[in-house]
Amino acid sequence: MGNRYKHLFFDLDHTLWDFETNSKLTLNDLYFKHDLPSVGVPNFETFFERYSFQNKKLWERYTMGYIRQEELKWKRMWLTLLDFKIANEVLSRQLAVEFLEHLPTKTALFPYTFEILDYLKGEGYRLHLITNGFEKVQHAKLERSGLKGYFEQVITSEASNNTKPNKDIFDYAFMKANAEAEESIMIGDNLDADIQGGINAGMDTVFVNHINEEAYIKPTYMVRDLKSLEEIF
Image 1 (cartoon, rainbow, N blue to C red):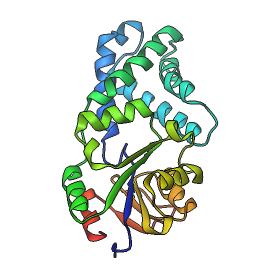
Image 2: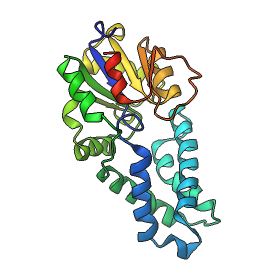
Image 3: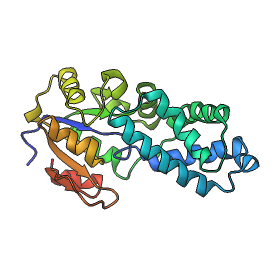
Image 4: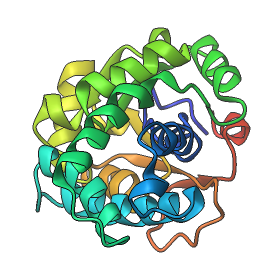
């Protein structure tokens, strides 16, 4: 099925790099470092639940172009603390800075990540990344987790000045990779950013459905885990 594809464009967070696990580990460190119980955050699990909620909401706004990168970075902390009636901008901004400093040091990946990338490289596919993440942070994640050497091009929203699902970020990626849409495929976990984005760019798509989500946007293929990509390619 996959013989006509030459260029495989992966998403990073939630697809290969386990953002949920890594962000939880990072926030746990910050929770105790800054003694958040002393300022009114009673337990870590509630703190992480509120952060996850606010982060998801703001990332959706960032993806749609409603807010800028800097606003996303600190306001997810600000809004999380506000959920506990803590209006502390200084602490919010400090947490935001330290979160992005420490997050890339965490290295949890989804099962079979290295194996599938080795397999695909061995089959002769050219691998690239298209990510809505920040330039410095994403490259640090790749370096620390051992993924850097697998990808020829790493396209970030920051470097391209666009976000998925906008067609422009994919056109930029095609230019950087010297690829055409019809010989490329987008592989990611996010239906709105990765699958709809790939469709917008005229690409086939693979929905990596780690959490058994209902596919309200129809991908070309759907897999439940990374190993199942071998059935496509």
